[in-house]
Length: 296
Image (cartoon, rainbow, N blue to C red):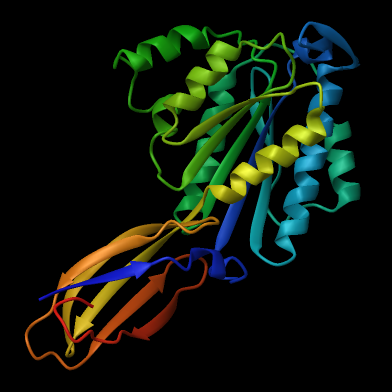
């Protein structure tokens, strides 16, 4: 006789403090960011760096609101030819602190997007190992000084080294990369290619509605792409018949995860234990009713 467990209550767990979301913002502060940008061929009144600052501030505000009910942390990385962590990983900074951090994002030097992604993946590695769902948000005008397009081509041809940042983007199913082009001059083909290399990625470009509106849309995507690992143990009459690690996604409507298992004839009790991994490990026990006929 076969049974099936369906886990579809991921949205109900969004308020649980054992669940974790990590946002890693990667901000381009190379010299080209001081230039004016354009949207659909029309010059905008702000420079590229001002547009980027506005995006980081708005995203920080959204994460801060979310962290009031859920365990969310924040990291800010800036980069030109070098990449450095300016904030975190840790609690989302206050609005005043975020304004100060963004004011310190000053354009200079050349651009190495690969180095920035490598550092972001190192931070992501630490967060994913804690069971957290990680979203990397890359803000850039897409001008790279170290021949990243050729490296992307080599990667797609299968010739890139395993230690590269592009390989790291594919390492974890709980990691998502969002590439945000902050002006029409950005190398959209390059950024779209990087997003597609990631195990899960998106490409966004600022439009006439502005950077704040784009961040609202991106945040909606983030909330539809939050995952966490669970281990499911199914026990029939005190005998374990299944132990399986699965990934649940926090979204509405829920994406059910179905796990089949075998039930011996005459079984009296069926229990499912779901172990949520992360900063805190918790156990949830469910007694499943048996149907009169062959299914459960």
